Amino acid sequence: MTIGIDLSGRVAVVTGGTRGVGAGIARALLAAGATVVAAARRAPERPVEAADGRAAAFEPLDVRDPDAVTACFARVQDRYGSLDILVNNAGGTPYRLLADSTPQQAARVIELNLVAPLTASLAARAVMADQPTGGSIIMIGSVSGTRPSPGTAAYGAAKAGLENLARTLAVEWAPRIRVNTLVVGMVHTERSHLHYGDAAGVAAVGRTVPLGRLATPDEIGEVCAFLAGDRCGYVTGASLAVHGGGERPAFLDAAAGTPSGPPPMPRTPVTTDLEDADD
Image 1 (cartoon, rainbow, N blue to C red):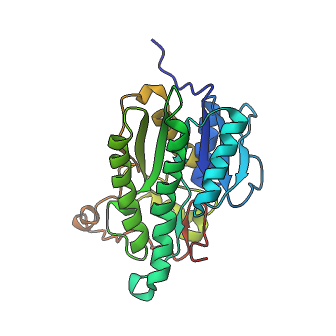
Image 2: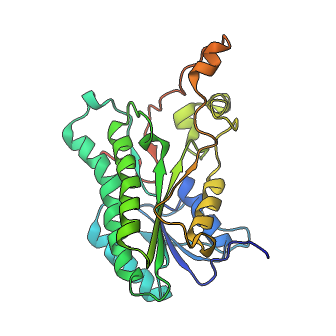
């Protein structure tokens, strides 16, 4: 028996799918045979393509606008005939200690990272529930939702809520629609230098991960494609960690006589699409 990922005939929407992790997810879904729509506020600087040259279509979308999301999914259904996979990837936050934030700033972060995926999932369900094959929804979560998240408190709280939302929807919408979460760790993207500095800084941060490096967007995408397909047909309500083993406990280095603190806190926005989350 050959075990592969075949998404031929499936139609996928990836929010924030024009760069970084989102582009890696879009490429992986394309490589598995899916028709992919990258929905984001800004068009990609270059086409998001798989190795075979197949490219993702682009749909302009601000995921914080529920009416725009519904209209976008309707266009996808009209154009391609179905909506089989939704990847809620768009998100982001500026670095700011909570005591230095206004309630409005915190609320906007939660709107983008929790409320927007909720409303997008509702819009996708309206399409998927009537399809013979149902559908698959994947939330892109974060290790920030599973550990303290100083400087990005509202973001961490939203990502924790996103995991709970996925587990709840998995129960409410079964058996027609599967809903799962990828809990993503640190990823080396085109914007990593904004968070970790030059190549030496990125490498130093990577050494805090048990696997010794940051993930690539395509590695996140490959796991996402696997979770979206029929090989995971009995997987729903799951949270799958893709973080290279997490963060190496500081006490291990301290015991060895080489104290090391946590990775440097990002002083610029943590984002997968909407870097100006304060807008």
